Amino acid sequence: MFRRGTSGWISYGFMGIVLICLYFTTFVDYLLFHSLAEFFSIAVAFSFFSIAWNSRRFIENKYLLFIGLAYLFIAFLDVLHTLSYQGMAIFQDYDFYANQLWIAARYMESLTLLAAFYFLGAQRSFKPETIFAVYAAITLFLIMSIFVWKIFPICFVEGAGLTPFKKISEYIICLILLSCMVLLYRRREHFAPHIHRLLFFSLFCTIVSELAFTFYVSNYGISNLVGHYFKIFSFYAIYKAVIETGIRNPYDLIFKEITSANSLLEKEIQARRLSEKEREALIENLQTALSQVKKLSGLLPICSHCKKVRDDQGNWGDIDAYIARHTEAVPSHGICRECAAKHYPGYKIYDD
Image (cartoon, rainbow, N blue to C red; front, side, top):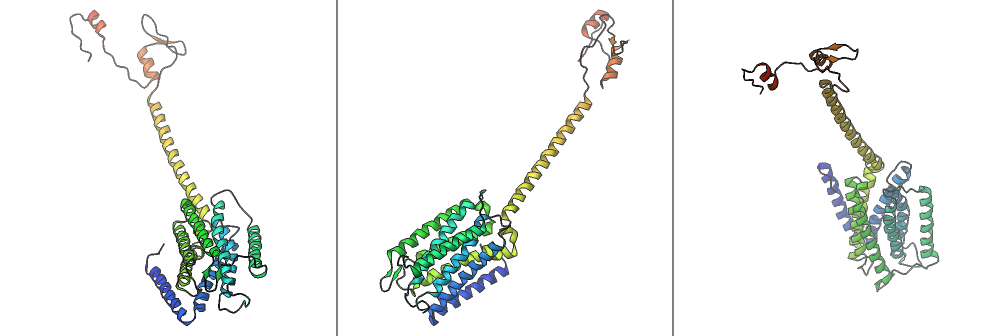
């Protein structure tokens, strides 16, 4: 997942310094830490959507396109989560909208990651505009259920901490994300190796983040801090996989399927060329063999007494001349054992 080289170490070193500085902001005001952590993930999510939306006519990986469209609405819920956090004093009627919005956003995120596999590597497609409209409707419903109708389950009680609904929801979300990790591993051939590793790492960090959010009893506690750090790690991996890759190496992201198909086609062409060369060599060898061998075929009239041969024009000629004219063999003369015994009775003939 980590790049080698000086620039890579500088990049991660700088990130480490930023994370340390971010931690020290908790001593100034925890709301400052929370806002910075959340707005980082929001910025990444909006950027993801921007790349997906503007390349929607070209991107072949429907999995990334589907997720990219959904992240706009996940980011919007996270914006409301940040603004409604306890102590922000924006929403005065209730202090714990943020907890409800968190669960709503995480359910949307995890289910989106799972549903996106339906479009991965299959001949299934969708209209981006339709997905946009569906997610807009779902987001509107969630916002109305929290702020207007107030039917969304309570997630946090002052003094008591998390409600059973909140804890159970976090575990369900973790199971959904774990399923996504399994599916992502099984379908890894649809991603460039480094993108696959980063997405896998992002899912892992998201699971750790969700687990951390099942333990806190205060919105300003250590578990809450750890959860937000792992959310930063998760979205940083998304940034490296999608945004940085989409800008620096768009063919690894937007045209991955086409590039893979072209690679397979090139291998097929090379294999066929090799097969063609082998076939041409075989044909050449056969032609060479045929040019070196001539066979007499059909009936060959031979005189019963003098053994002359009749050619196609009806002329009788010596068999030696006929063989020399119609084949590449060169006749030579010897004497068989029977003739030697008959004509040369006093000589011993060796024909080995």
